[in-house]
Length: 314
Length: 274
Image (cartoon, rainbow over all chains, first blue to last red; front, side):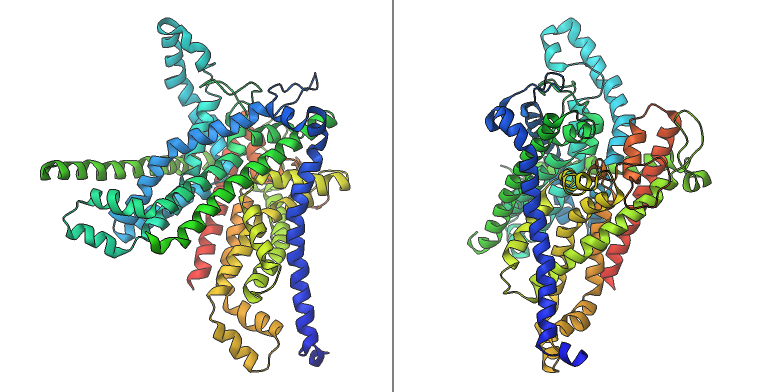
């Protein structure tokens, strides 16, 4: 038998073994897209694809379901978190790659990466018991009381100052996505050739001018790809957001008020869904979330590939 | 611009860069310190040996969640590891195989979609046909989460090995499967283990895919076909509960989970270094 396995038969069996398992991986991915689509088909059929996306009422009692508040919630929270986290994460990347001795840079890099290793529920736990009370007592309530007397028109924009809502969720989200954009930016900055920096220093440039005029422009592709990947993380982040955002069904247009994202509404309501239509609507939101993250990842992939392909032309 | 202004600007901007770095690091150090201080008090003998007490009553522990975490994650690693390794070996050792391009694309796609969708998928294809929540369905969700990570790391590690190694094996008359199993995989052992452990660490912290698959269980259950608890799930449930004792234990569980994940990450880094 062993003789035979050392002939062609063994190789044929081995290749087939790998191909079957590899095929299973392909099948899983295809099945996933298909199941989310067909699971949501009832909702898409009932409300129409465009109607489901554009409708902003979510009412289990009336049987009205629309994805718009959650789609907006996801887009707004992610965009805000990205804006807040961009400067600090880039600063950390520059400090690690340019301004610190290697041993210190390594420690800082390890710590920044540790932010990504902490589970999402732990961020949520800290959010509930530390950030929410802090925001409520020291920022939201004082600001709200100020607004009542001085700028009543602000009140509708602010929303209830309970601490639970958009602001807390966005702050935690921006902390959570820092390691993703920072580590790609760090790698991109480290890829900038030494000769570029040395030429600048030889011309008498200061440390900041070297970074500003040479390093950042050279590494911009990687920095941007990191931002897009961080965006993908923010879009899919579930537990911490679910625990802090308040899970409101209204449009996410108030600063302190409760809202929901696509991921959080699924996490929050799927096990308690009453009736096929609500279940299907949640699966349909899952399908939209799938499409959105697919789109974002393809953009990041495209940028990264163009960056590596165009390396010589800069 | 005169020289003094350039120097001044340099000093200001470099200070700002360090200030930004500190803004990133401070919350992390605060989180680690706070979780440690809050959690360490909850980690007593009961925590590791007892099932949860009913709400409002004192005492009780996390045994079902701790055992469940290990069971669910090991089953997930077995499934995800097999599929991920196979995909990675196929892409690295058979570079011309027609499945490789689709596989690479799928690794990208699966790696980029939110973990909660793995939970939805496992619900639809495992929980619904099997008629109830189960630890196995949770493992399926986590395994899908692990596959792209393992696939990519395996491919990268194998590609680092020189082609001469394979040629030497083939020249000795070994068939390709022996070359792969007896030469390539042992040579890449460290890197492969790193990939497996990183995937494990990533999946073990996730609660979202388990919400409607493993579901959680107040009692100790070792059956893969019954609902099972896990630490991330328990932290979520306890954190949003109104009971003092449960919240205290949520901090303990957070500390334990964070320590386990850091240990896994540490082992992953060590495996490659040797």
